[in-house]
Amino acid sequence: MGRRNKSKFAILGLLSTEPMSGYDIKRAAEASIGYFWQEGYSSIYPNLKKLLSEGLVSNKVEAQTPGPDRIVYSLTEKGWEELKAWLMLEPEPEPVRNELLLKLFFGEHLDAKHQIRYLEKARVANEIRLKSLQSIVARLKSELPDQSGLPYWLITLKFGIHTRTALDAWFEETINDLKTVVKGSGSKPFTKFVLKAADGGKNVE
Amino acid sequence: MGRRNKSKFAILGLLSTEPMSGYDIKRAAEASIGYFWQEGYSSIYPNLKKLLSEGLVSNKVEAQTPGPDRIVYSLTEKGWEELKAWLMLEPEPEPVRNELLLKLFFGEHLDAKHQIRYLEKARVANEIRLKSLQSIVARLKSELPDQSGLPYWLITLKFGIHTRTALDAWFEETINDLKTVVKGSGSKPFTKFVLKAADGGKNVE
DNA sequence: CGATTTATATATCAAGATGATATAGGTGGT
DNA sequence: ACCACCTATATCATCTTGATATATAAATCG
Image 1 (tube, helix red, strand yellow):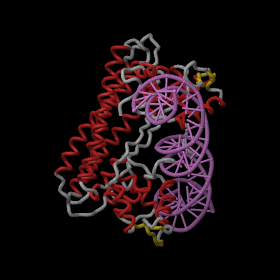
Image 2: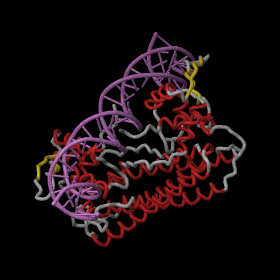
Image 3: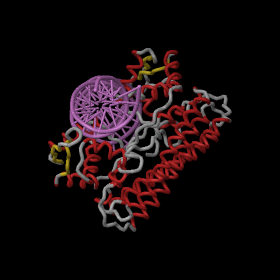
Image 4: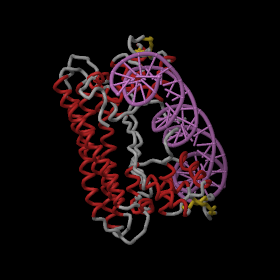
């Protein structure tokens, strides 16, 4: 089997804040959980139908005076139960894939110019995100000081601020390192080194 | 279309270090790039066949005196070119999905006991990884000081050390926060707040 | 006023990624 | 003989996702 459908619960979670259409869900996801969770239309619309058939959401068509019809979904009682039950399940660590690191790992076959360009571009994107997170924290605290969800929103925002600040330091350090790389003459692969390590090839989880 | 096949290049990269079987590739991936890139058998074996049909790798069967036959794959000249061409393509930012953060974001519907348990478990795993990275750095520097790949291996290891150190601070801060959460009385959703922001709903980046 | 662009809104597809599972030979212990 | 474990290859069903299609209506522009 594949893995369990987590998009389903992200959508349930977003609908728990207020009734929304698929289009709304996409925009709300980008604006709220977008820093650590992405959902596209291709997962939202099929999942809304699935959730409907499972009785976890209900829908009704809203005709708009300006613009096309909207199909607005709301959590049912059963949907709330499902959401709360999911919250009580131990979260699994998500697999990470970082193409930048993969390219740097095989960096002996790529010139420093390319490497530094990749890093500088990623660094700028990281700084923009970091500033955005910081400004959202400031605005939340001043504009929505008394909302029951605030402590939890701040926790996830701080996660981004902590890790992205550390990332920025790594970018600076790494760019400097790459400007003065002196290559060794050996050609032993890293893989063999680690596999033959003291733990007998087994790595710590 | 889906996205371009990146497993293919991870496998090419690993094979560039030395000829390996599918089983070797899995173990080598875990031991070397496993901290930022995962490959399972379900992607390795089909991709090896694909790479073979594309002429990017060659293979030969090795009978083992103890144990079953091995199919050992090597990079061809064409495979080397493909790998180097890929290294020169700008890496795309990978989408991040963090189930722990998703559950904390909707944390007002979950008791603090569960939340703290999740965080403490994740923190322990993070600390183990961090220590493992630090010891690998130390061992690499002392045991393989003159390898041409060393600067690049260290770069990726330092990435993990930087971000996981920051993560550890966030865990401590967050666990302390959750022990003294005072919930507000309001119930405005975060989503609406951000969507109505000055940038008109568009987020940076 | 007609043309193009932009925003709203729903939907589907092909390709890629992945946890689970199947199969099988060999080794070592009890 | 049986069980547990390691090596080794392979496939499936499900989930995930970038790209694309379709349609309405508002906004921009020459």
